[in-house]
Length: 66
Image 1 (cartoon, rainbow, N blue to C red):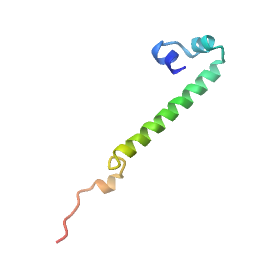
Image 2: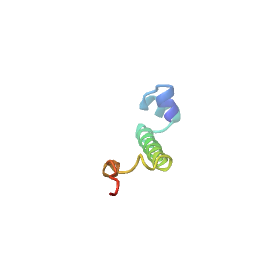
Image 3: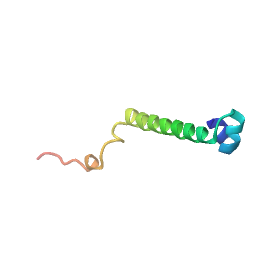
Image 4: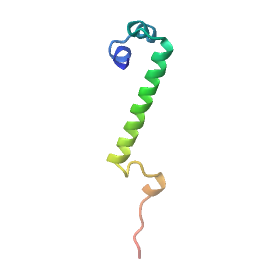
């Protein structure tokens, strides 16, 4: 479905006709897949770059002990 919509540039209605399903099924499935990919990308960012995921407070300059 993602290929039909984004690569082939079909509308959800055209993709639904091509796949023999409802437009609602296309929209629901695409939203679900995009959400899963978004979560995976965020998780990958946190795992690959744990300091990038830290809060802004911990990014403040550190003071040296006297």
